[in-house]
Image (cartoon, rainbow, N blue to C red; front, side, top):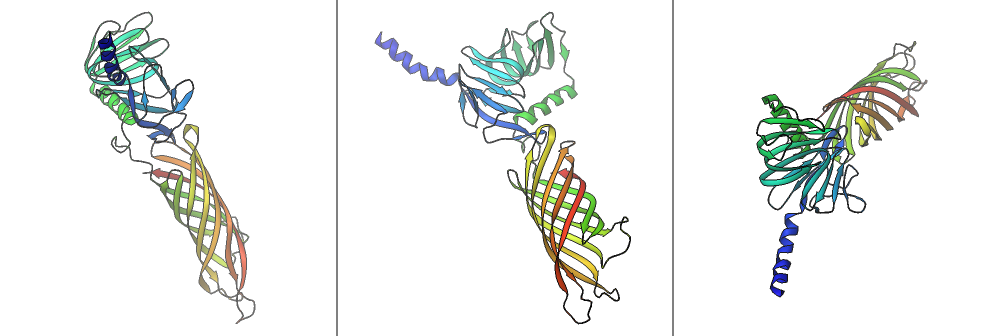
Length: 362
């Protein structure tokens, strides 16, 4: 009896290890697209009496469950078998194997792995994708076979769907379908750099709008670059050119100006690809101004300024988006004296501008 207990105690850690899964990769949808995630979020949670955000390296085992919203998770066991749970999916860890309750699950098992999908007990030996809904499911096998599927085993290169009433015919996977499945897997279960999806590190923005300065309206156009420093923190550097607005009648002393700005930005992602952000810029305004009040002799001016920026926009595709930016601040302005030889008068010059832009992400 004592020998049996000793053997049981020795085997328990090994059995527990074989039934646990380590979190290898987490992704969350930011700006409409899946990006690597290294901190707990509500997009991928473990259910352990309550919902708990996950971190890479955590382990999950029998009695626990996973739920994803706008995120994905890649798991691996001690034998090197991997499970990838896609967005809006649920996976429960039963004593006899992981059970897909709803959603999509990618499976890579060099050795046979039992996966429960609804009422079906599947044995996956190879690479396959399982999709399960309230009305049926689909198995697509890239490598190896899946035993126990409705209608019999499914072999490599075959996709089969079923409903509660019938089992569909086997559908050979075309090269395009196989490539599409691989792209689906890479986007969700590979680190962004390895999957060929460059991180969102740089934005180039081209914009146009209206600048209100010195009591005058100007037409404004320019280009801006934004470099991610860390998380939601960016550094923006831009240059623009402002010419007289056609809505303004009499020309003023300032004939043109070219604002150059640099400053931090703080951007925050919203649902459905929208985002909102803002920051503070230091500015240098280079322009041409009449040097005297009597006769207009153009003279180059360089004036400092500062402004607050608020912008919001939406991603139209993975690399392209559009936004609206509003800014307001103040710059120094020197007004030529009416008396020859006297120093210019320095006054604050309120600056307000609004621009509409399009940008490319790198």
